[in-house]
Image (cartoon, rainbow, N blue to C red; front, side, top):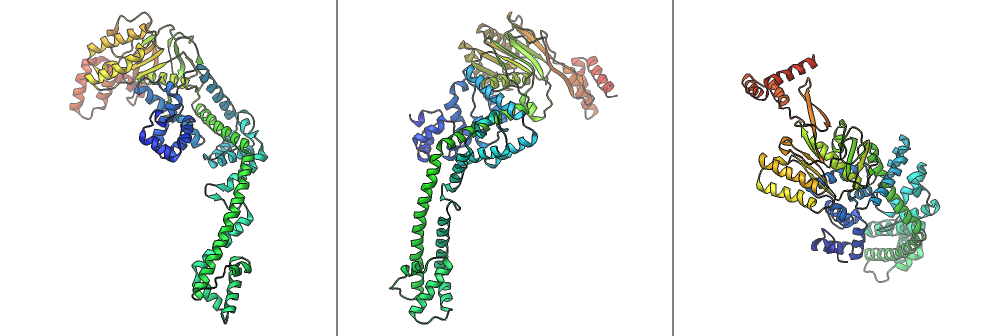
Length: 578
């Protein structure tokens, strides 16, 4: 297979991968979603992630039918990756994609739930110790994996998802760890072999003496030697002592035709150093062969440790994500449905943690107090009332479930979804934006596949009259194509009559707080049209007016929207404060 056959791998990227990794290893890195290998080959982490997502989950990525759906997906994997216990686990999370097979979703959920049960069963001290182990040995080498496995065994964790790691053969892993610790990319490390260490020390000492030829010459002459023979013997004893070598080795290296004493000293030391360096190389080759033999003998144990530690780190990371946000396993059903009970928006929860949960549903479900059977809902209500946030929350639930991950709700029912069409409100008003939007949201519907439509204020991209007609057509098309949809709009009255399987829901503002903040009940009320309640906004502007003329201007607006309602709102806010 050619590298350029992979999505996102152009000629330049292919050349770099072939040069740095070779084609077989590059293909293996792509197929195994190895972000590290691609990054080390010179590919940016973001590009490597995109390549690997498509290579390993292209069909799943096709579920993300719009740019806004892809943005929500990226937010989710980035948030989950914040809980990664190793860099490699974070990379694996970032290349997670929606799955197309329900059984694969269930299997991943099983693994995450098992890890979550194990994680929640640990006390705080043990959790900290486990995290310290992963942090201390965070690396992509086989040595890091083996040392992680041994360190986790030392912590004393056992059972659950730790079993695959701590049940490995410790004696074999310790032998392999010692070998891996001493056999590095630069050769054999110090401490692997005492004889090799001594030879290296001698070679270093001889190199130092050679660099200081005149100091050696002065030191020998300071002994008061006379004549050539006496000088040579004193030189032999001096070098033998300083470099810890046998005198005969020095004699064997001495040159007979030196031009003078300095030439004799430097040439002899260079010759002797070269001889010792040759012995260093020979001994290092012998030790390296022994170390490789030890590693080879424990290859199965090492490979098992690499796989087990990688999977453990990955699943523990997802478990920490689920634990931090109280995520639960969604219930998969075979009919069309998306229903959530007390669901929370993860983006908001991650920012400040104070999120009002909502219960909402489309399709057939068994949630109490929520109408069932409506394939489409039209969501109306107050500005800043959380309508867009609700759409995003539903999108988060659908995508997390599709990735085989738990969701932010007390309970969730999710039917099959082939395409997620999420469209946020975009405040651009021109023909190009309208055409681009229609090209984005209509084709997934027209395929006849199971589509989830989550469309926010479609009217923002064209004039109100045409927007109502187009939105009504989009709602009708959603029903005709047996899709599910939630459409946020302020034009609910202009959409009547809706198809029989559609309903209108509303979110209501309830007034102003003593601090003149808008009070909103984010839980939609079913089968009712929500009100925008502009009098609340105007009331706040009246109260916050900086001077008399400004206040007079806002009071003109108050009369337009209903002065009595504005005055009542201001009075209620003051009464609440008192």
